[in-house]
Amino acid sequence: MSQLKIKSGKNELRLKKSKTLVGLRTREESAEGKDYIQAEMHSNLGGFRVVSLEKGDEDIDQKLDEIREREEVEVGTHVYYAEGSDKPLVATGEIYITFAELASESEQQIVLEEYKLELVERRSPNFIVARVTAGSPNPIKVGHLLQQISMVKTAEPDLDTLLDEYEFREPTDDLVSQQWHLRNRGRVPGSNYRLRYGADAKVYDAWQRLDGMGSDNVTIAVIDNGFDVNHPDLRTKIYRPYDLWRQSSSMSMGDPRFTHGTPCASVALAVSNGRGIVGVAPAARFMPLHGTSFSNRATEQMFDYCLENGADIISCSWGTTDPRFSLGPVKEQAIERAARRGRGGKGCIILFAAGNDDLDYLNFYAAHPDVIAVGATTSQDRHASYSNRGRELDVCAPSNGDWPILAARASWEPGLSWETGAYRYYRDGRDRGPYYKHFGGTSSSTPLVAGVCALMLSANPDLTAREVKQILRSTADKVGSSSEYRNGHSVRYGYGRVNADKAVAEALRRRDRDQPPPSPAPKPVEDKVSSGDGMFRFEVEEQEADGWGVQVGAFGNYGNVMVQVEKLKRQFQQPVIVKITERGGNTLYRIVVGSFPNYEQARHLNERIKAELGISSFPVDLSKMG
Image: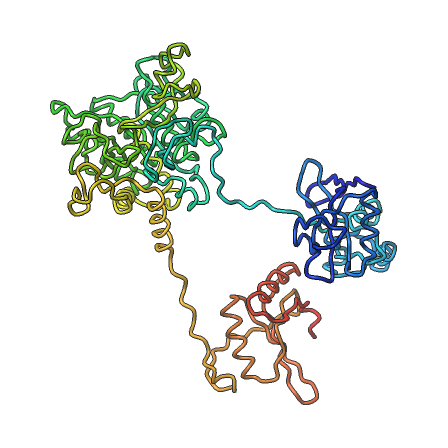
C-alpha cells in the first residue's frame, strides 16, 4: 500500500511512500560508507537516519527488506511525503490510541495483541501510547488499520518531519541589488560607475540583527503631495490616509504637478514582495497625508491628525529657507505637540529634510528643536553639495550627488513614452520599468532615516522620541574629514552618516537594560544543614492523595530532606511534598515536586527537572503513594 490516509493532530494526511528514501536505525554511528547507501540526507528524524539508496532494479519495498537483514541495521522504515509537501516524514514507532469509552482494558489488550503492539504508557482509562514491535506492520499502516476498528476512536502514529527555521532571509525584489543606499558593494549592477564600498546606511546589517525587516505595528506617516496609492510597492500598506486639501480619506491622484510623495514614501517603506524595490522598513504601515501647506491651520491639522491617528514616525521632505516665511509660534507648537504627546506620551518621531539650497542654514522646519534634521551624503560617503549645512543638523544619509537612489514613481508622472521617457527617469538611460525612477536630494535621505527609526521602534517600542534622536546621533558614523567635527558635530554631516545597525543594536541594548530585574533569589541553605543543623521555616499543610507530581528521590537523612526541599522549591517554584514511610524501624522520606490535576502537566515538569538537574525523576500518581 503506497498511499495511506491517517489522522495527524487536527488534520488528516494523505501520505505517499518515498521511492528513494528510507529511515535506518543502525548499530554504528554512521550509516554512510555502505554499498547500498547513496547519501545520508538527515542524521536524526524520528530517531532514524534518513538515507537515499543506490538505484537498482528492485522497488523500495524489496530494497528495504534486504537492508533489514543486514547485521548493522536494527530497524528500517519507510519514509513518506504528505500530499503537497516536499518534506520527508518518518514514523517514530509510537502510536497514540484513544479507545471508545466502553472498551475495557482486556478488550484494548486484544487490539494491541492483534497488531503485536506493546503498551508504553496509559494516560487514562481510554487513552494509551503503544509502540510497534518487530512483529508489527509499519506504524503508519498500523495507525491506518486501527482507525478502521469501531472500538478505536483515534489512532495517531507519532510522526517527525523537518520544521522551518525562521531566520532572516534577504529580500528578493528584482531591483534591490541596485539600491546601494541599503548596502553598497562598490558598484551598481549593469553600470560601470564605481561607488565607495560600504558608503551606505547599513540597513542589511540591521535586518540581520533584527532577524527580520521590522514590525507591522510601526506606522510611518509621510506628509507630502502626490501619492500613488495604487503603486505595487505601496498599495498593500495604506493605513488611515488623509487628503488635507480635500478634507477626505480619498487621496488626490493624477495631477502631474504633484508626484513627490510617492518616491519619498517608497524609500522609507516599499514592501518586500519579490518585485521592484524595497524600503528600509518594508513591514511598516504607511499613513499618507497629501497636501502640504504653510498655513497655521493646515500645519496644526496635519500634525494633530498624525498624533490622533497613531503615527509613530512623521517624515517631511519639504519646507522653506526663505527668511520671509520662518516658523511662528503656532507652527512650532503644532510640531512640539506631536513630538511630546504622540505615542501615548513617548512622542512622535518627526523628521524634516535639511533642504537642497546649498545654504549655511537649514530649512526652518528642520531647525525645530523637537525635529530630527537630515542632510545628504553621496555614494562616495561625501557631503552632497546641495545639502544645507547648519548647527541644528542631526545626521546625514545616503542620497544622490553622484549616483542617485532608485525609488517608486507615480504612474501619472509625465514622460512615460519609452521613446522619449526612459532617459528622463534613469541617469544612465537604462530602462528599469514604468514603476520606478532615479531620485535624490534631502527628500530621499529623510525618509531613509524615517525607515531606520521604524526599525529602532521594532526593536524597542518603548523608546521616546528624544531617545531615538539621541541614539541616531550617538551611533552615526563619522564620515568626511575628522577636522570638520567639533564636539562630535559637523555642520555638513551633523553627528555623522546614519548607521541603522548600530542604532538598532543600541535600541535592543536599552530594551534589555530596562527589563525589570528578576526577584532576588533567596540565599541558598548553608551546607552545614546537610547534617540536620540549621534553622528552617516550615509551611506545612496536609496533601490529599490525588493528582500527579514528580518524584525526585527518597532519603533516610532528615537534614538532606530539608536541603532538597529548599532547593527544589526555590528552583522550580512548585509545592514540594514529602511522603513519610516507616520501614523496619527506619524512616524513608520520598520527595515529590508539584501537585497537578493531570499527568500531562507532571510530564512537562519532569522533562524540565531531568534537563536542569540531570536526575532520574519520574511522574507519579499521588493516589498510589500510600
